[in-house]
Structure formats: C-alpha cells, structure tokens
Image (cartoon, rainbow, N blue to C red; front, side, top):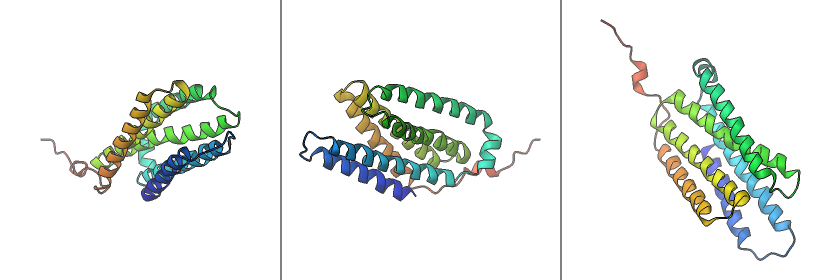
Length: 192
C-alpha cells in the first residue's frame, strides 16, 4: 500500500507538471482535467496511506486505551476541515466542487489522527517518522490552499514544496525500520 501511495502521488505530481507546461487555449478543459484527475490521484494516494497505517493498528486496543485522544482528535479534525472549507468555499468555480473538496479535505485531515494513533499505539521510530511525514504532508496541503485561495505568494509555494520534501524525507526514513513496538513494553516492573 505504501508503494501505491508513492506511485499515485508521484503520478499526480508529474501530470500536474506536464499540464502546467502544455500550451492551452482559453477553455477550461485542461484546467478541469488537471483539477479533477490530479486531485483524485492525490486523494487515492492519501487513502492508500491511511489504509496502510490502519492495517498495523489494533482498533480494539486503540479504542480501549486512547478514548480521550480519539475524542480530541475528532474535534480537531472536524475544526480543521471546517476552516479549510471556509477558506476554499468562496474561491470555487462550481458549486459541485465544494463536495469534491470536502471529501478531499476529510481524507487529508484523517491522515493526521490515524498516523498519530498509530504512533501512540506502536511507540517506535517507524511510527514517529510516519506521523511526522503525514504531519508535513498536511502542512504542505494547507500551504497550497493558502497559496491558491488566500493570496498567491511565492513564500507559500516555497513552504509547500519544502514541507513536501520534508514529508518524503520522513517517509523514506520510516521505510528503513520494522514496525515493532518498543521493547520496554514487554518487561514487567517488579516492586520491592
């Protein structure tokens, strides 16, 4: 699943790069293709990453031991999606794009709590790097939203690219480790 995430994400980036350098007429067809198809590839890539992370989590254990964490993460996720939709809502060309962006933002924001719960559950370097990579991917996407819908500033585009590179650095680092828990969990404390 992680390889599929990398392939879909890379394909979307390459298509975006290709379409931005193609000569185009005044019609919206190239923009529509790039917007829908590339964002769909991003969405699928994030979904693959969420599935990959979720497979390594025992849901019963997480629900039993991290109830408060889950409630707080759900509240923060809902708020973040609400804020993103508020920023994006006015800048959309078509009303139907609102629902596409809503699904996209839900999947994107869902990546954060899933990766954080994975880190809390696993408590190892691999899970930490996976969480940090996911955190920087979300930061990158927020910078893209700010660049497109708030104000086109070069610094926002630079930050987005930098955060993406940092995210993939952490994803590369996590790929070097096996997904095992810390060894200290397996020892019992003996009180005198």
